[in-house]
Length: 356
Image (spheres, rainbow, N blue to C red):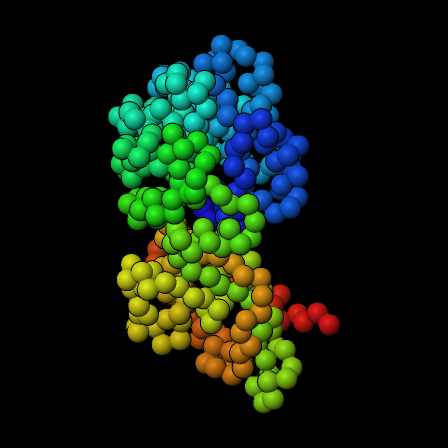
């Protein structure tokens, strides 16, 4: 997953919980696999007035990378000033809290109260986005109450005013943390905008995370592959392990393990039959270029594939594959296609080193 130019090893993020997610807690969660952490929320007014505790809360740990810092407030100018001050703490992202339901925040113009004032929320997002050169994200709720469900409206305004991603907690402010998360509102927000949407609320274990992905429209999955010998299918010839990487670094999923929803094909299109060998690679380039398509990696070997196809039948076939792949990279306007080709060659060579 990517938010602008910030990449994450996975899309399991630690929520910025005030009073809980301090630096020690965040680093502990990173050690257990969190792909992204965010500081506890800090008052923009407090920060700009020199509050010492605010600086302590914004301090990130050495292993927190990528990481964000979160600020709240209701004045666009002060929020922009606070965002600039945050940069000295070296965050990858600045997050704006527009979802906190706590009375001392929400009843004083900040946090979830901005769900009732989308225009002011838009002004704040615009001011902060213009003030800094790193991605700005926004955390919102379903709405203020059941009569004021504004998540979709606010998400569109956030995107229009420069937000790079949106986190949606599927409860209203009046619910606080009671009741159940509304998965449907998160799915509606995801459908309404083209920037990444992060689902929040009631995710406490692997099962609840899986339910969240299912309910909120994860786009696809991919896994690992083993090429087997052509004659007996009994000897591994090449092991393709596919944790997330970058297209420009020669990475792509093993196509036989890639499962996508129909909506992805509707959006990206089908195979381009102009390519006789690498139509699958061209298709995956188009998928990976779209930063709003979210893929989940399954660290399992789910495909055992016989070598001997056009692209795996020796050196001559591999050279043909590379030549056509180079054309696909150029057709899709990928920068430095020759460098990408070279990096793909090295990745393939590493896959052929079978560890016994």
